[in-house]
Image (cartoon, rainbow, N blue to C red; front, side, top):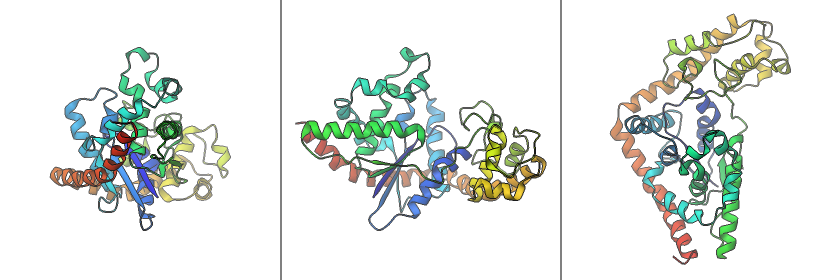
Length: 332
């Protein structure tokens, strides 16, 4: 079993990134059997599909590496690297551009969502983003890829590209990866709007809990989080139609590794005046050690660079033979 996961390094991780993906990466790493491999990369090449300030971008790459390690990814057990340091990614993307079809890319809903009404003004990189994602996965012959619901379509595209490449060349080169949707993955919403995902791009810092936030900041953000005046119910179904209440209860459940029903079993009938402090205490207890480790890692840029360089070397050892076979299959 070989899993591959990537994340764009465009700023500090927040609670949604942690509960929705990174915590599950660490758990998958811990569950690896003998011979299994996990690769985690900073998708810096994907990030330039939209404009990035070069200075902030370079800083964000190291910050993201520090955050991933602080959340539990062990560079000695897993392979952690920067996408830009493994040039086989972009070389394979170009080869796969000859296999992917415009009609397939036109059906990608994420491009439509991100481009909005400015499709003509979007970068070509944003349009071909899914082909680079396919290269990210197929380069390592990944057997499984952790995905959220919004990425399932891109993994299906990777499988289509792999199938067509193998068929066109008559070479069984690429493995068709299977999706993993981690059962413990949480969908964390904004603290200011329970109908919108928690996002680093939200202009309000009060909408999210950053992993580097200190205890006082976490408590303040949760205390000011939007709620409603009704007490908590004893039935999870009663949270439907109460997005902010449902979000805070779901965050508590995810941090405590409990079900929403278990949380409501303790807090049913109570208002948010009692629930928010309990949630803040739990969040500080769970996130405090991560923030401390994150700050220590950020202060040692040389060590972060060393770890990423080692990871890139390990990744290239797997990627290079696959790329060479792809060139050969095309007669190059």
